[in-house]
Length: 240
Image 1 (tube, one colour):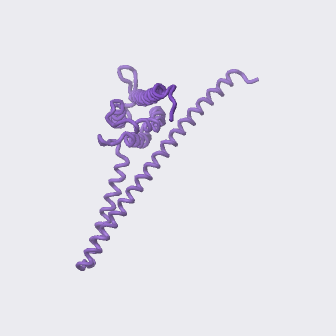
Image 2: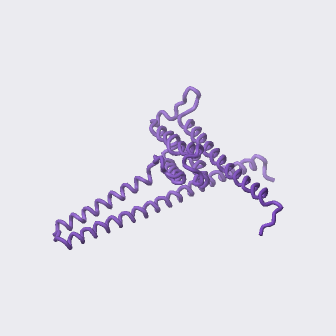
Image 3: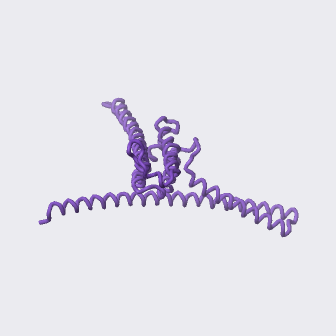
């Protein structure tokens, strides 16, 4: 018979491993979503580069048919094509990585941009904050599906957008600006900078979860209202 203490330790170890597996799974999912975004961004950028080079080539050929451009003209066209391609590649990469968003960015793209920012910022945070970030990232796909159906100017959607585009990124950026030697010091309430970071991330995650649940309840209420209307309107009536 296995002693109770050994059984308790085994159960505790299994629980720890289960949490680690769950966290690793969320990290893998976040990495997969980031790769998909990067691949999509590279595809769009490659298309833009191809179109730009094609336009420059056609323009060069057109000018060459009218008047000879010579070797220097040809080299100038090649240099222009290379410069435009480099500019498009550079701006395309910045667009994918930027955590800040335009006010008119759709809700779904807003969530994707925030998800990408979390994935990139995760490496610079302590382990407890990384775990909290993983929990936050894991709930973003469902939140994206909900927000995509909501107008951008919806008050709850605006709250979510402010959290994802301003408050949480600013929190992480300000933490990264704190020197390492000061992160372990306790404040007047006995909490360290690392602990404050984890608490704030947890509060932001809870707020986003509450917004998602509230919007989902609105969808449920709308469905129930539509169902009751159909029952009331067509109950005990024969459809031709």
